[in-house]
Image 1 (cartoon, rainbow, N blue to C red):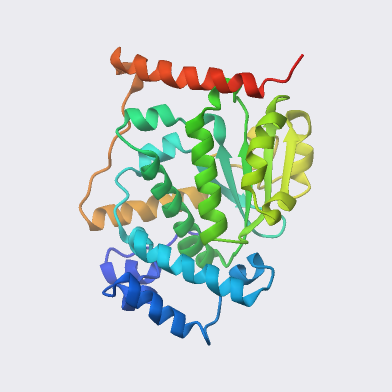
Image 2 (image 1 turned 30 degrees about the vertical axis):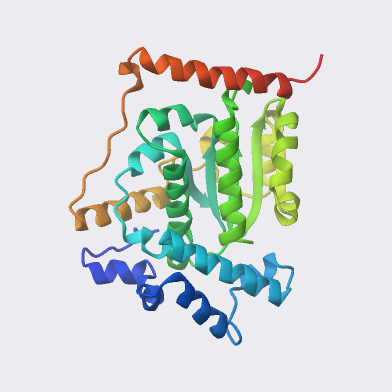
Length: 316
């Protein structure tokens, strides 16, 4: 697949990002926008995914869609794709989400390496959970407004990889971020997930899953498959062609995780916007050079993790 063509001209990037689609709202305040949308909603075409998510209840679908439009206005989401992502490389290192090919139905595959998600390093780099959620919004907007139209796809298969995770990695920051990210996805990009896999699960994960399960809506619950390490390859091959599955999971993909052409195109897109705005990237701090003062924060995180661990470790 060829790379996404990107022009350095601002109006071209605006078109690619769907900027023109929403520009009439840019000068209106929240009240006038909501009133306008409510009037328009009488005859408006509600996006199909909102209708599916509302179990074909059109009134509920309209209500949810209006809520999303209001949220997009409040968070300035329509401009996020033309905003320089100065922290892009930091978040790529600390929130390891990667595009990697397609499943057997032609849907995107996104791999999330949960063990590498590091809230402590996010804080050490002067970033907050809100910054992390903004990156999550950017990732979703890129996927559905840039990549999906280009590749003619409208669904995603998600692989959440727990390889290397320890019960002591699971702290309140990670759980809070996962909860917030799931909430964002289900509310504002609903019914977009074809299937989700949690793979390479350790024996104690069942107790963690019991905490996460209530955060999933009914549709997410039905589409979620949990697989231990022994059955990961067998399960994934039922849904993803071997040539699309990375070798890290026993597949035959020529690309390692993080090096798929879809990933490379994302980097090209971000770079084009950065050049356009003459911005520089924030660099990831080397945590090995952190001073002793950080240890107090680390100790706090370890304390939280240890106290929560007593809830997760199966009884003997």
